[in-house]
Image 1 (cartoon, protein in one colour):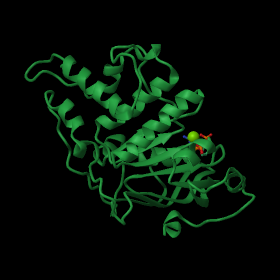
Image 2 (image 1 turned 135 degrees about the vertical axis):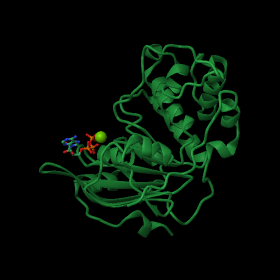
Image 3 (image 1 turned 90 degrees about the vertical axis):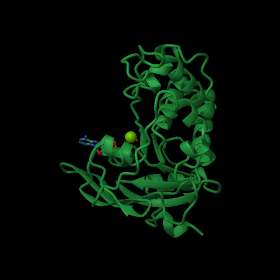
Length: 287
Ligand SMILES: Nc1ncnc2c1ncn2[C@@H]1O[C@H](COP(=O)(O)OP(=O)(O)OP(=O)(O)O)[C@@H](O)[C@H]1O
Ligand SMILES: [Mg+2]
């Protein structure tokens, strides 16, 4: 497998806020194509005797939300970590826009335009919203070590606005925000890297009904921006509300693919628990 990083986009301190304004910056590769943005086929991952993924195949296009559902230990987070470059698969093929790729590290994933929000949310509670968004990507005043605070604040406001996030001030300490608002910050942070694909692992777990609705709005915005979104969730109502496609994993294998708009909780539960069997992949269902 070869790595084919896309052209890195360099944002200077004075242009970051403007770049966020430009639709093409937020939706690189936005046009819909028949080739999936990401296709992971026959993925295998073993941890000793445990086969976390045993041949799972998942694909997602631009402008599309594909949900992955499945019981505990079905392999969902393992899939997210492989796409994020955190884990290396033992078998299978990863293709991005039709090109085979390897994703040897999180920075390689970033270079390929893949952003991930992990199940155990990583935000720095002691830092404010702006500092969290720019953590590791701080904008500095040209030729000085000084942070370009004004520019970062402006960009932070624009990013949150783009997602429809309601956060009182970009200078609020993240620890003082609700869990839902913290999730908004984590999702907004992915946009700074101008991704093509965003993978969200259980973004609504342990959120209130109102906060969940807000996170679902963010996911809709990501799709509207032209990104491909993989949404991993236990909440069948959430995924039915928002996903274009729902892929069921069971014991690391595909066990059913459903249209989000027509799937019922009963048939999803039957697939998740193994009461029904179906190993067809999403590409076979697209009409
Ligand atoms: N680093 C690891 N070392 C050993 N086993 C692991 C590791 N990561 C995952 N596993 C195992 O792989 C299997 C799949 O785990 P994974 O976290 O992908 O499941 P999941 O579908 O995300 O579950 P959940 O719904 O509980 O988050 C489980 O049996 C888990 O214990
Ligand atoms: Mg998980």
